[in-house]
Amino acid sequence: MAKEVKIDFRNLYVIGGFRFPESLESQAEKVLPFKFLGRIAYDENVEEYVLTGKSLLTLPSNTPAYLSVKRILEKAGYAKAVNL
Image 1 (cartoon, helix red, strand yellow):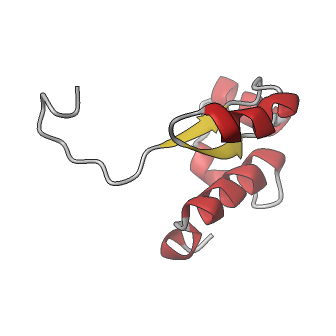
Image 2 (cartoon, helix red, strand yellow):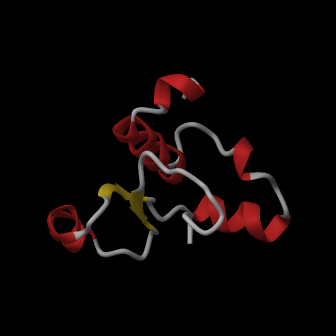
Image 3 (tube, helix red, strand yellow):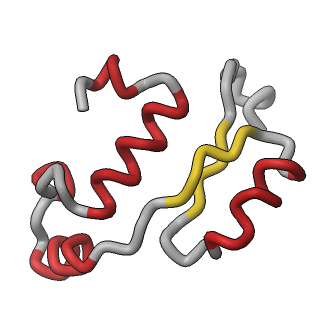
């Protein structure tokens, strides 16, 4: 599809949602054709924010989802660029 719309991707990554089993992370790293960066942690704060219409960009930096996304971005090499 990317070729059809003439988009050039240099890096493709796989990220698991909070329901992706932790027990499968090492297997995902071995068998997937793209680099597996990790999974986003379950976070009650995300549920609350979504249900109340709050922006996820305002999640506190000490919440499980925020910290897991920060680790994913670091693994991808983007954390310094976005200053997390």
